Image 1 (spheres, rainbow, N blue to C red):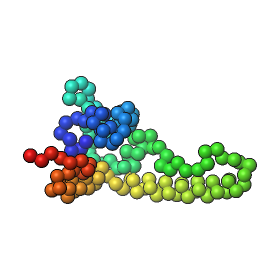
Image 2: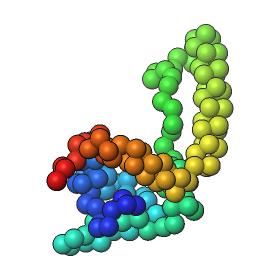
Image 3: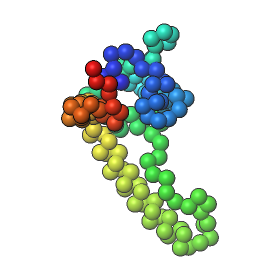
Image 4: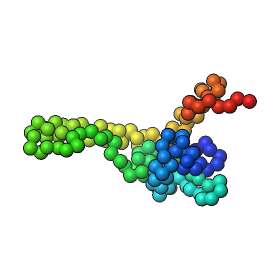
Length: 141
């Protein structure tokens, strides 16, 4: 989106991400509330970046979309009567809490500007082969 001169529709973004436009709209609503994207309606409407990419980290984005759990591991139906399960689940929960804290800390160091720069470098490296960073072939004239 940062490199698109025109707003991108939810359908375009969904196609790029191989997901549903409804999922994109839900996600973008959180990003819009945080001021990271803007939306416009009507003909030629869609989503555009609404912030300075150097000021927004992946942690900011994570929080803007609701800060969902990063790990989903464990018993679906814990049995509090089982001592072994309680001990194992406690050890797993502790390890996951440490891993999540480390991951969130790292996300706080990665700006969207840094990702955009890496993406630009990837596109430049792939351009001579007739492809782009999405893996799709581009038309050559």
